[in-house]
Amino acid sequence: MDRVRELDDRYRFMNAYAEGESHGEGLLRGYAVSVKDNVCVNGVESKAGSRILEGYVPPFDATVVAKSREEGAFIIGKTTQDEFGFGTFNVNTPYKIPLNPHDPERSTGGSSGGAACLTAVADFPHVAISESTGGSISCPASWCGVVGITPTYGRVSRWGLIDYANSLDKIGVMAKTVSEAAMFLGVISGQDEYDSTVLKAPVPDYTRMDSVEGMRIGVPQEYLGEGVDPKVEEQVWTAIKKLESKGASISEVSLPHTKYSLSSYYIIAMAEASTNLAKFSGLRYGLQKPIEGDFNQYFSKVRTEGMGDEAKRRVMLGTFTRMAGYRDAYYLKALKVRTRVIEDFKKAFKTVDVLAAPTMPVVAPRFDEIAMLEPIQHYMMDILTVAPNLAGVPMVTVPCGESDGMPVGLHLMADHLNEVKALEAAQGVEQA
Ligand code: GLN
Image (cartoon, rainbow, N blue to C red; front, side):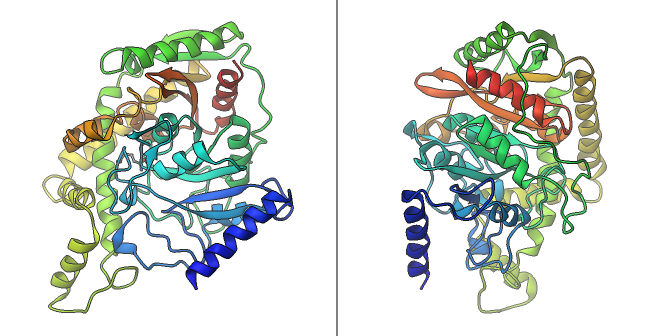
């Protein structure tokens, strides 16, 4: 029956597309929308890339999915990801690893790897619902050469998202072009009676973008130089110069707490993740086993089988940083550092409209290179994306050139709720 339903869905979409028919009225008529596996779709298995949620079929749509349907979208399917979002290369998955569409020996990036890959290869109108905690939209979008928007924390409802770290999670979008991504962001943004953390600010028309003339662009000095591939840096500077030639002014700024952001991010993200994962015990959702022994024995058995190595590592590290005796030294200290990181951004946005930097320090690495990395080296790859994610500011990645035949992304970050500025800069690069 699943297969029949699947074929029926495909047929309806392909047929409607071939005939130029809309799937209803609205901004997304004619569009296929793919949904990252950690966002619930009514009647479709939604497991955040984890075996422990196998068989979980939500009886409801996440708000972003419901809003997409209201605008005439056709939900084409779920896209693969690192388990629960724990990763940067989409290799932390018990399922098939997505391959970079520009070179199948390289990673798509993660954790929204499937979303970025599909966005790059789709030869029909398509936009992707994806999600970022510490860079999971920007990283894969830049490595696959598409546009990704991570909105302000609280701009988009998280109702129906399978949480990674609640104080950091943002649902966002990917698309081939800036204008399609902006349009789609408008569709999914705004208040929701099911998520009281959504910001009350009205949703502007993101597709109304001005030129970059007069825009003040800051280049954070900590985001260039050591650790960034010079060939990536060259592409980034070329794009920034293009914005300058269109009338933007460029200045250097400093985000001095950048060097502490990685440790702060991983402590907070893992602490929150370890509490969220406690609900997956083989009783209410997904994977179940015959109950044997006491509860602890049963939970251990289900988690041993249902969770991958990285999820287990995060349960242990996250629990450790919250334990009595360590909480002050790690978790609470990380929260204080986070405040400093937020202050860095707030201060920078007093003098500039947008910050521009490389999205990732290198182009998509090859799988044989990834296999050589230690867990901490996986985490270090996020050095340029975790700070804006900790600060909850909006960011857009836009393709800005190539290095070794692989796409390079320019990262444009703006002040809270100022998505439109980052989009304007991104469109400036796209047009140039
Ligand atoms: N790579 C980061 C992590 O593993 C970010 C992932 C994400 O944004 N979901 O936590």
